[in-house]
Length: 109
Image 1 (cartoon, helix red, strand yellow):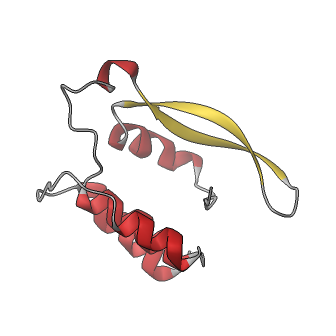
Image 2 (image 1 turned 90 degrees about the horizontal axis):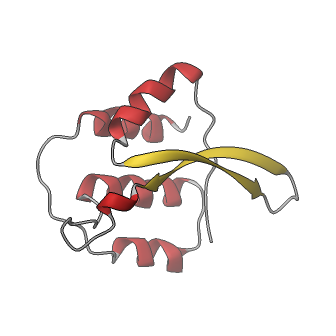
């Protein structure tokens, strides 16, 4: 599995929680290739939404964030291609946090 760890300000937590509204925050232990252990906050979909009633495919916006983040973090091309081929839900509306995330990715922060 490939991943990137992001260090965020505590002040970002409320906005991120609001964006991830159908997900619950959880903590996981991540061991990096250099054997460093990090306790990381991530999100798990709430059980009520894990059903055929909801379209759980990622939005094109979220998929774009994953692909660009993978490219920025030198993930192997085969995995980037895998991400690009994930079927999205086709949502074309506005996602307020998307532009902010893109600004961060584009700045290399």
